[in-house]
Amino acid sequence: MLPSLLQDARIFITLAIFSIILIVLDSVSSLNFPKAVFQQVTVPIQYGLYKTSMNIGRQFEFIILARRTAQQYKAQSEQLANILSENAQLRKKLAEAQGFIDQSKALNDQTFTMVPVRPIGISRYLLIDKGADDGIKVGQSVVYKDNFIGSIHQVSPKKSEVILSSDPDSHINAFAESSTGKAKGVLSGQFGAEMLLDKILHQEPIDQGDLVYTEGSELEVPRGLILGQVSEVLKRDNEVFKQAKVKQVYDISNLEVVFVITN
Image (cartoon, rainbow, N blue to C red; front, side):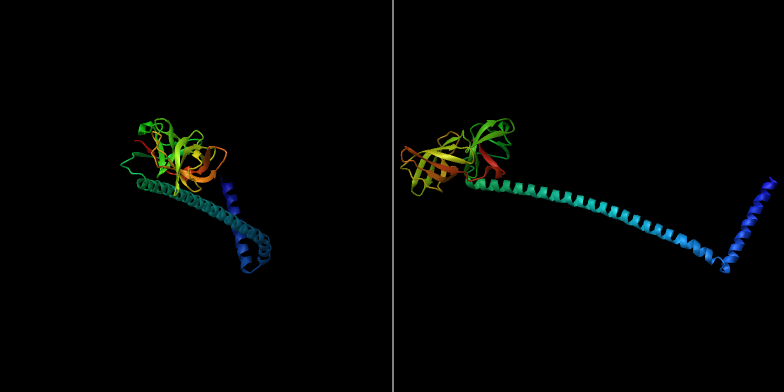
């Protein structure tokens, strides 16, 4: 045990003496050259470590900034999407409210009982969001303002199909009216948006721009609803009847609400 303590004491004394020598030499500037050589080697290394740490710091700062920017962009995009969605809902509700106002001005509520319905799809038939549970029945007329849209073709409990006046299976007794008189005929749907008013006597007046109305001879179709407007008159001198092309006044796909006459 004693030899080990003596050895540790010698090492301590040796290091203490060496430290004193270094302090004395440094105080008299004797270590300036070794220090200069050592610093010449270590300073570039220290500078390189400093620049590397600065670059790494900038990269981390860029990553953090980019992440924060991405989060802000995502939040702003979600906020914009919500605003656009709310705006679309407001426009839809405004269009529906305007439809109610226009409808109340067009047809007398004391004469007709009308159920407001929303179009929810269209292919060959217009699909609406109410059915038998709401009093909807096959054959009832579907209108918008004082315009005839079509008739109920098929009914289920919660939705119904409307056959449009432009459908090839649609045939409605109609008349065109102008300042010079009336021209009666049968309005049939065609493939596409146009309709054809047929069986018009040659002596009956009809011109481009005349409005075409329902005759009212069908059980569920009131008289005087607008079916469309004459776009072209087709005359054939060697035939008994003449014809007229009729275009719809409204684009069905743009309507937010229509009405079913249920009485």
